[in-house]
Length: 262
Image (cartoon, rainbow, N blue to C red; front, side, top):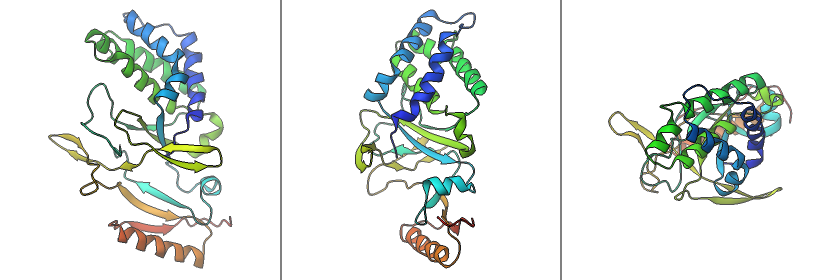
């Protein structure tokens, strides 16, 4: 799972732009407003100290540019069950306040929609019964809550030039128990975390395990192998199906069906 702080800077710039002209709604808690402004001002530093980990996915699996840009003849697209909650390796102690559940977020591309969304969230946080207002009132790590909400906000904003990607992002914040791994890349060492699945209990809420014995696997719903079509695609479909079955996944595997030669 890539950790690319650079992609978050566009969203941070949009939030800064809205914040400069933001007029909190009547009844807003002044201490919450000031704390939120302070969190925005130092957000670039916060990203270094408490990095985000982001999974990027698309709601449009048939887009040619996705295959051309992100998957060559050896690539594949892994389909996950919609809105499934994932958990990073090393997680301990449950999802307790003030830590929020990691979430899938719809990415916004239109600048007017982005600005409206930013203003709405800011007002919601500092309202008389808003989350940040209550955190300050009850002295429950309010700044951490502000940072987490800001992180989710900036991760949901992307430059309009990428609109065709129709992206959704799964975002989780580095915590003290997060197991961070590292891999080489042309741009240097890239930190990442490994994700596992969760189960939903009607009485206990989101349940997870990160032990090697009873860990919950990723909620894979299906896999598509990339172009080109033909005999090569058929071989790769068969190999992928065998690989998934060997790891306990009985899911649909198919070719992308796109007449494209990488």
